[in-house]
Length: 287
Image 1: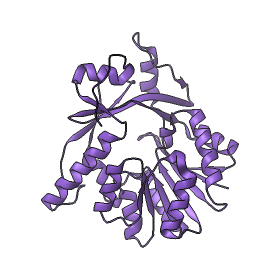
Image 2: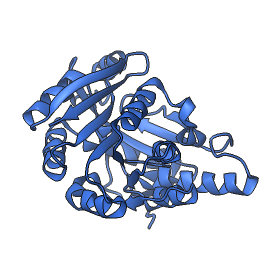
Image 3: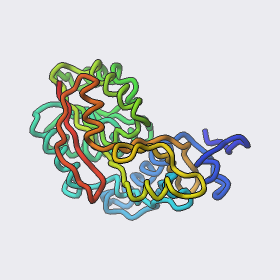
Image 4: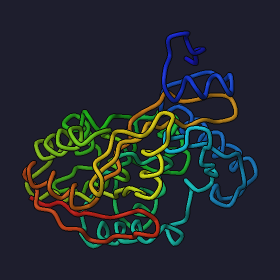
């Protein structure tokens, strides 16, 4: 349930609440709620949700505390031909593998839907019940509510749903592990939970070092959680017109840092693609 911020709430969300006076909700709620509202509006209008103009989310970070990045909600409903290059490559690898795919953090299910429409039998996983409801509205057959931190149970459920014998795990923005230590823990968990022939595709958000250097050198609240040319952790929050999500840490890491963490966790790793202009990269893990 939404709740007003308390007097002892600190950090990014407290600053935002003082400015905006909105209710504070769980971190995943604003995005899930906005996608569900957008999907319902698109259904009512009889148009594809990717073509419908709607409200914008605001993505806040401590790179620039007072200036959010506006994100149109319809950007979460892209057609597969409109995916950016890193995601196009990931989809091609999923299709070529000829296996069933578990999409972690599936959101509105655009990647799951593209695979399903191509004759595959993927599973979408998201922590937001609203996001899972959106996937169901879009006709996605296999979608479940769950956390990346309960992958052993999640993968068993996914196997039962689609009778998986082998699998591909696709994780868009594994930065939600929140830290380099969290990345190590997640990769070890994934290695334990998955089969011996599992392959993993991680779509990374890489650091914008120009912005990070500027934030680290400012006089007030300088950014401190980073190692230059390797990784940075930002405090983030998402807001809509009527609520602000709890802040959460988001890890931005260079591909070679992720590759080193993967090897220490029992994976072989290959950097498939880097898009420096978009600050994105795709790495592939195998056992």
